[in-house]
Image (cartoon, rainbow, N blue to C red; front, side):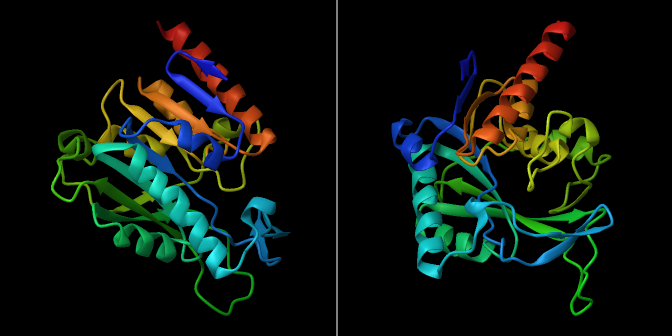
Length: 255
């Protein structure tokens, strides 16, 4: 699917990424597999359900997971412009591996370690450890000495006139965000919009190589950013198309 300012690919990201030009992307916002589908259980809507999300999320050996993350991170570095930034979400299942790889790339600099506090996390059914209620988001810049864009003033305004901290308390995706279907790791539009508005400007190019349900694309379109989304699973690619079409129609009505 290709429209003005929107490019969507239903393919393996490692086949599409090499086709993207060096130094051509302003910002990457992505949510790679956490590899936590281990046949365990969790609670959803008051019911006990499997944590398994799909073959793409099945836990693999350390070397395979490490090389998978290394490959997309190296491609991220290549396609980002100097001073461009990468936002990557994760939990303890994957974020430490990702952080160590990023730290090993000499010209990457971690700008912030954001803690997303979920307002209504699923309860811990085993009662043997603390309830998981947070995710980590790394904000990373290409270029140790380069300058990146940060809309400090807007973030301060959004935060009631005070400097915005690196702890974000944000709920789950709203019902309307799932009207065409849902993804098991779908992020709320609010958290993606904060990333986009704080670190990009209008007409900037935003990339998500693990597109999922297309939330980053919807928010990019709404805020006049160009978007490249790559999604391997046909189901979620089709869901993204529906959400993009809906957002396009809303924008036409607002004109």
